[in-house]
Length: 244
Figure 1 (cartoon, rainbow, N blue to C red):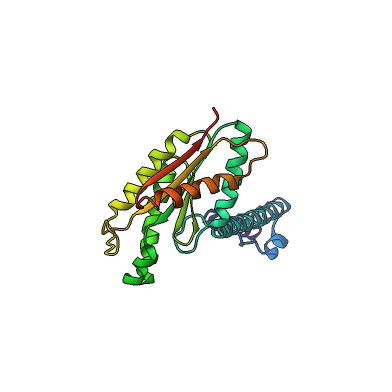
Figure 2 (tube, rainbow, N blue to C red):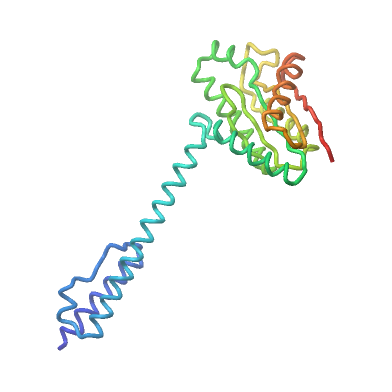
């Protein structure tokens, strides 16, 4: 009689202790059920059901975390750790749609690291990769402060998508980024400034019916290459066509 009481109680206590530590694979052996009273048998069965449910929930949560990690990795640039081109395309499409629905302007900044090829030729591609990582980190940190999205657009080019409705901040943000990169002080002997700098081109548009996000990219690209870079680099130019 004592064994029929103490054995299931001991099994339940041990099991509960293990469950508390987050180990949900422990089950009470069926042999304990055989010798236990009906009440204890039902209690042990309920314990096993609970442990089984918790184990299933744990497995589902681990799967969710794994899938989320894979999703983040699929949108992350392997070198810099910021968003990749896929992330950029998706984020721009979503932001453009939101701006169109709200009838608010959307801004895009394109950044080009000045004379990175010359930097690689002098210091080596490993040094060039490290420089790109440092620049990307600064861009990402500043972008996050205003809830903007930073991404590697391609090669030595980075991009920042500003939330809809803040075109007046685009030039200020671009200059903040440009100066922050210059303050990194990464030596570059083949640059007139003697440090790594970025040229920035931006555009702010209010999406109209029939417009496509590629229009925003084209305008930002034009200001980057035909103004900021041609006028000496290490400068910011912003194109605005905002309908309020």
